Image 1: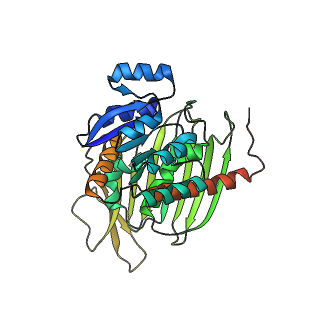
Image 2 (image 1 turned 60 degrees about the vertical axis):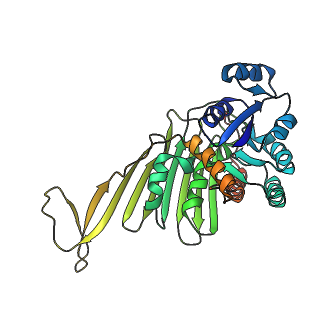
Amino acid sequence: MLKIGVLGAGHLGKIHLKCISQIDQYKLVGFYDPSKETAAAVANDFQIKRFNNLHELIDAVDVVDIVTPTVSHFSCAVEAIKKSKHVFIEKPIVTTLTEAHELIELAQEAGVKVQVGHVERFNPAFLAARPLIQNPMFIEAHRLSQFNPRGTDVPVVLDLMTHDIDIVLSVVNSGIRKIHASGVAVVSDTPDIANARIEFDNGCVANLTASRISMKNMRKSRFFQRDAYIAVDFLKKDIEVVRMRDIETEPDDPFAMIIDLEQGKGKKEIMLDKPEIIHNNAIVTELQSFADAIQNNVTPPVTIYDGYKVLEISHMILEKINSKAYFKPLF
């Protein structure tokens, strides 16, 4: 059993504490949070040990789960890795690419596992859709959220869009040719709404929109590929697949959707499908996958390098946004 401790007991940290308690491979040793009021309340509510500082917690565990604000990810991870602890670290992995480079080198030198918390990889809708996504050539993603002060310490690109950047990179096996982006700061000092168009060397194009000032919540992605269209609703945990297949004769079904192609090219039938979704708690699944990777000595499903690539593209998008003359707070 792996002894694990959690750094950070805010909104997401509490969720991690609950999820860890459901995983047999872990023994939850305790947590640390710098806020005395928060720490006292969490220790009482969860009936778990509260450490006086992060150094004591790191020394007491095999695995460190970092759920602190992004600005402290690097310092927490460095100390844990230098003490040869395995590290699960929430996204974005760190603040700068220089920090990410250093973490990669430290992790390799220490021989420890590091997994980044890009949780949408474990969303049951995406898990069901992933085997069906084959060489997509156009991807469109909308991730819209109602305003919440939590998370505004970083631009919306690092707060929300990183989820979709990671999903895109996980299904497109190609280098990046060009990025276009724009964004506007509306209520905070960094972009609250942004759009990015990522063009890949293989011809695939991904169009991503993220907003934290919307009137409703939405987390939808659509993947277009040869003879198929796959829609994934990460929020409702639902998928829809539209396929086309060649047919020689029209089926007996009067409701069948048939497309006549150009003269001499035959016909295609449009088929609608809703594959079965095996529902899960995505955070439980990702934390469990990290335990499996440690115990079986295999590569974690979302590696430290995956986290670096997402951060690299996020910064490229932010550079494009910051170069726009109109990037100024509106209010």
